[in-house]
Image 1 (cartoon, helix red, strand yellow):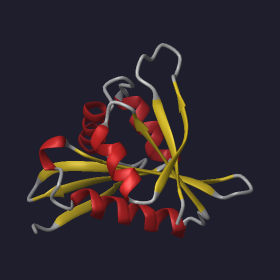
Image 2 (cartoon, rainbow, N blue to C red):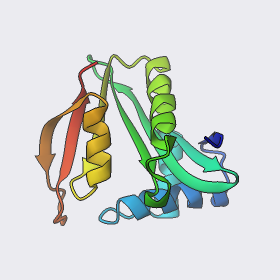
Image 3 (cartoon, one colour):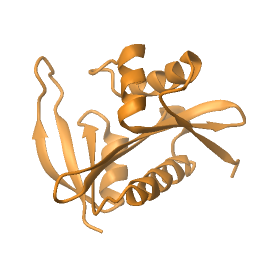
Length: 150
């Protein structure tokens, strides 16, 4: 397997990195498009990373830090369709999961757009179970929240 290079995209990131992260998000989640300013704000609040192989963008991740009495963190791994089924998602997910645990997470959740069958299968095969389906205002495709049972 080719080496995956994963780098943090934080509040000091340049527009090129932020735009790359946005591209992956908006490609995989076309019902909830983010602007560059949206990503810039998320880079301050969340732990964002980009994944490349041989200089080619393959995916990204989001870790929303733990919140509340349950110390629940949200971990989201995204891999562009043309790079799936090569183990990249596994690496991106495992790294994001480790980061959530380092931040003090005791409970791990994720969310997947219902139309993303690959993402839903990935979550289910990695020990997540569905907890809720819902529509955001103006959306026509439901979101699925899942919780890790591990």
